[in-house]
Every structure is written in C-alpha cells, then in structure tokens.
Image 1: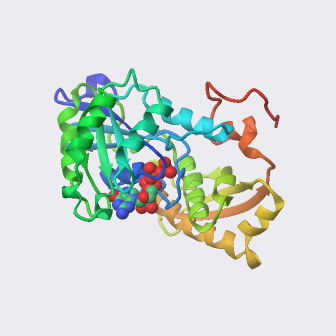
Image 2: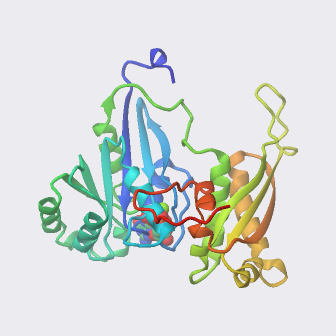
Length: 328
Ligand SMILES: Nc1nc2c(ncn2[C@@H]2O[C@H](COP(=O)(O)OP(=O)(O)OP(=O)(O)O)[C@@H](O)[C@H]2O)c(=O)[nH]1
Ligand SMILES: [Mg+2]
C-alpha cells in the first residue's frame, strides 16, 4: 500500500511464531486469523515453510510469521526446516515462543535455546499452549517457571496461557498484540491474508491431507509439487458465474520408494482418491469456486536430499547444509 494513502493512525506489528514441532503454532495463527489458512495435523513437523499470515484489528495490522518447529537434526531436509524457522525471526518486532503445557516446560525452553541462537533475541513472550489438556492448569506453578525462564532467557517479558481448542485467553492475546503494535504504515493491502499465493496453499492442503491419512514415516517422505495451475476465475470486471468457474490443478505427490507409491495410491486407488477429495474441498473453499484436481504419485528417490526438489518446495540451502548435492 502506498505510504501516502495510509491513515495517520495506522499501526502494525510483525510477530514471529516459534517453538518445537507440534506445540500449536499453526493452530494459534489460524485462531487469530479466524480461518484455517495454515496447515495443522496431529503429527509433528507439519509446517515446512515460513510465511506471513496477515489480519487487521481496526487500524492495526498484525503480521504473524508461521515457522516450522525447531528440532535437533543432521538430516538435510530438517536442516532446511530449521533454517526457515531461524530466518522467520528476521524483521520481527516480537517473538511468540510457544511452550506446550502437556510437556516439561523448562526442558522445551532449553531445547529451543540449544537449537536457536537466542543471545540477540529481542522482545519475546512465552505462550503456554493447550491449557485445555491440563486439569486445573491454574494450579500449575507457572509463575515460578516463568521466573526461571526469564533467568535463562532475559528477552522474555511475559507469559500468556492459552488454548485454541476452547479459546482461553485468545482475546487477551489479540488485545496484547494490538497494544504492542507500533505506529506506522501497513505493509499489506487491505484484504491480503498472506505473502504466499493460492498455488502454495493448494500444495499445502494436499500435503495436509496426505500427512493426516498416511502413517508411520510415510508423511515425512512425501512432498507435493504443483505441475500445472490454471486459474479459470473471471478477471476483474468479467461476469461471475460461481457454478461454472473451474480451476484446473495438476499436482504430484513425491515419494521416496516404489513401495510407498503403492500405499499412497491405495487399494483400487482409494487412498489417493480420499486425499484428493478432502484437499479439493479445502482448495475450493479458498478459491471460492469449483476446482478440478488431478493428483499423481511419483517415485523420486531421496527427494529430501535433492537440491532441485528442495528448492522447488521452497526450502533453499541452509547455512549448515550438507555439501554433496544430487542434480536434477
Ligand atoms: N487440545 C489442544 N490441542 C491443540 C491446541 N493447539 C494445537 N493443538 C493440536 O496440536 C497438534 C499440532 O498443532 P499444530 O498447530 O499443527 O502445531 P505446530 O506447532 O504448527 O506444529 P509443526 O508445524 O509440526 O511445527 C494438532 O493436533 C492440533 O489440533 C490446543 O490449544 N489444545
Ligand atoms: Mg505448523
């Protein structure tokens, strides 16, 4: 948005949402946004790319940066996921560090510090998540835990206990973000929800369903790439007939081994059909019209070590990336 078109009372804040895998980062973002934009599954390491999610409260723009869960690793794919999380901090005015109340809290902070250089951390709030899963969470010695956390990491200013399942304190969190926002221009146009496009979210929604439906190590050995994305919606000014709009998307689910291909296809194609039906519904809700989705399963051995594929799915080399590359 052009600065000269900005209202003088505008405020904005960029907030990095950080924490271990599965603590509820994407769920928190979706709750604040009011839409299921970011993918959420019951499995750890669902989010693979950092990206911005944007919403506004009156004249305050809040930009939330979703990030992959940070964890210890030597594998190339995971190094790149960690790099996405670390770089999610860049330009943030505030960090929300999510700590899952159903697991030891101090240990999570120590793990986080081990995986992230936190010495230069600015303004950080601890968000204790999933309080609905803890009986009598108000009786937990959280203020003692917070004191200890502040000692370990001086950038921590405060803590909020939340649940995205029953909404505990989520309004307080929104209010606190608005209060912490800084007077100045908005970065995004009104109505923008993300810096990623619908094509990105289409791959995410396919991967989300595959992640949820597949078991064991298989979710971690799949990737989704869009081969063709034809947006058939009418251009600005053209008449809109919702029944007729049909976007065409052709996408591939990459697997590591031929035996995995058989599982993803399923008996009589049942699994791929289910992944397709569920993800198509979510993509249709996003684009606001009918979608024709063509899904394939391709064997791409060790795609998770292949620089070409990793770049294609938005994971460029990390600082600590391995030195040996497979070519296209
Ligand atoms: N009971 C309960 N479950 C939650 C809450 N927040 C998230 N979850 C669940 O926790 C799981 C992980 O949530 P995500 O939002 O995907 O977690 P994440 O931190 O983004 O995970 P990664 O992307 O893997 O790093 C999902 O099954 C969520 O439904 C909460 O407040 N209460
Ligand atoms: Mg996530």
